Amino acid sequence: MLGQLNHVAIAVPDVRAAGDMYRKKFGAKVSEAVPQPDHGVTTVFVDLGNTKLELLEPLGEDSPIAGFLAKNPKGGIHHICIEVDDINAACERVNAEGITITGTGKPKIGAHGKPVVFLHPKDLFGTLVELEQA
Image (cartoon, rainbow, N blue to C red; front, side, top):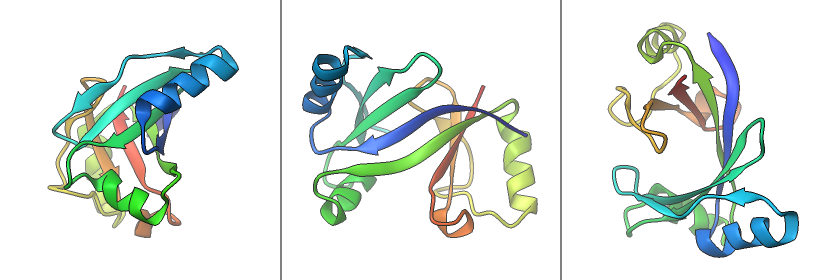
């Protein structure tokens, strides 16, 4: 069911400054900042060739990243994203296995324009996992 690692998401107080750091210090290819209002974040992607880093900054006071940064002001790893061939089949399987899908429990469109769901960290050894349609 699980495919390749799509990205590791890092919450940061300022995605532009964090993106500039990866660009200047490592010569990384870094995307422009893109607001994702449906998810309450602004994202920047750092291309690593075989995967990506997703830098996340809160977009608005209700952002789930705002709470994370309140506990971790300098930022930190927020979640990992793993690709799946069939997001609906993956949802059925994790539900059958007793793993909680956060939010409505239904896929919604993520930062890459593909359906995603998030799996609750309480069911996955403290790690928030995003599943994304490949």
